[in-house]
Length: 173
Ligand SMILES: [Ca+2]
Image (cartoon, rainbow, N blue to C red; front, side, top):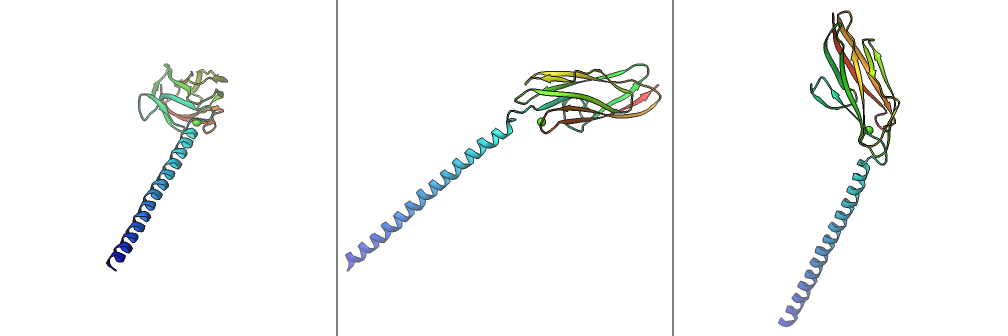
């Protein structure tokens, strides 16, 4: 009887042990599987971030916010400050291509006040990956007052095909 009980206990412990081992390895396998799935999805996600063969416009120049040359976002405000006639104020901007294929800038268009002009306008232009083109916006002062406008850079960037910058400045005679 005693032996029998011991054997039974031993069998039960062995069974418990086996179940435990199964659970352990099962969990390990499950976690391993989840880990591999996460790894694969991360690789896919990072592939999505790389522009998938598309161009990616980047514009740098001087904005009101920073006061320094830096990367500009769609919709940023460019402040020419006080512009004293007859001295023109020129601001220079650089169009870069941080994508994976050629960027075609079809046009750079001004709207709003006619104090703004484009003495340097490279469009239409093809910008290969990693290369740049410069355009200049000129503020020609006239009768005193605030002058606002917009510059639109039209390109084949898939998510920023119409990149706009708001322009402001104060004409002083
Ligand atoms: Ca883009």
